[in-house]
Image 1: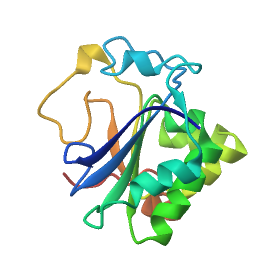
Image 2 (image 1 turned 180 degrees about the vertical axis):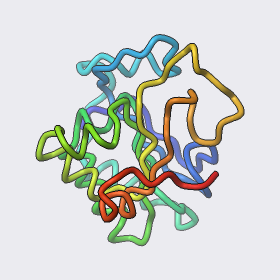
Image 3 (image 1 turned 30 degrees about the vertical axis):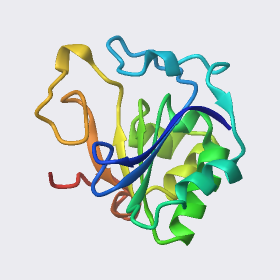
Length: 163
């Protein structure tokens, strides 16, 4: 998988101590993105899922895996494999995507749909600079939503997590 960066013990990419995996490659190119160097799908460095998983599991205090980027849904198969490993080890999985929940559920590729089904919380939608807010937990702009994915898949509509 192509990796932009890995962060151990993040406290800003979801609740608790997180292992944040920033994937390389993003088709959205949102103006004002805080990781514009992650957009180029050929940038970053190549790592196997096993290498990333080894880093993920190093710290026994880790509460969860965060998939960000870039856009993890641009590398759905590798991110799915990593999410499965995280869940098998008792970790929760959060993901950020410029695609919406509805797009991924209804029009995503088979790989994107499979990854969505392995995510606990999705922060969805493109970052919109004109709606930027530093007061919002877990998201950068007011249009983005923090979605409980299992509840949403069960309900057939996006279920927003309370802040």
